[in-house]
Image (cartoon, rainbow, N blue to C red):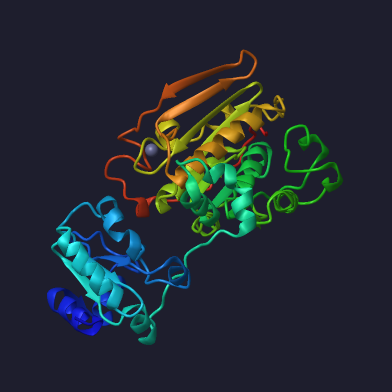
Length: 397
Ligand SMILES: [Zn+2]
């Protein structure tokens, strides 16, 4: 039997589909492939690495033909899943489809014409994120951790984190997030660098006194890691700008030093479903927790509304041990990295308290309040109203 006859034979035994059908399925899921069980087919690209890196159908998974039989059970354990395989022209995927049906997969199709036909029809395609040789070296200590790997590092490189404040907490969190290769790092701060900041705000430098903190942050982080795109928002949060500023970020690191910003951030983040890594410091003590929508309480579960102005801390600036925000901010950065990579157990529902004078960590359980005005029962995120509280004197850090 020659190959032509053999292929004809194979194609007679498998099911084929066409580009238009696949396009419809991809569009229906907004550029993502389905789960193979009700939400649409799983798309599997069976081409070689160099072909995959040139572009692939949005939402497709990549399992090269040579590894397909070995890896399919891990990737798609359910034998009845709706699978569509494609290659460059439809031959390799036809052979692969027959092989999978021999493995017991009952709902496999091969896309006729392959990726070539997909492109010829004028359809868009995605390109995989490939780390550069420099990035492979820079992040080697991350990628050699099986919990992170290249996949986790790419998640970091694609991630967008906003630091509320480029002060003490924003400095230590920001520096480590930058070093870790978080691709986009935003800072919102309307202040300029002051000499009295430098005892703890390690993003800044003596020769930058008087320059905007967001500018100084950009300089430091880009000096450390040119992979990071630093965005400076020289503004103060208000109900007018908060949604616009936070909407493009994946995680928010809250290093705010005032109540109005904390409440605004909490409410806006719940509205948009964004996780907030919250921390505060005072003298020798710091605390940190994660407010992850749907997983544990929010800031208002703990403090439903700001204290009345006459109960607020005095207008005097409080002292703080310089290294304290270093530790607390690094804890915030750690939580942000874990959330982005999707590893470990987050601080959602737990408050971690650090007492620097006695070198003690304590942990407290935090509970969601069913009557919480912003995340309680029956509260719809879209109906949350943003409130600009009057700024009153507070402890500036
Ligand atoms: Zn709440």
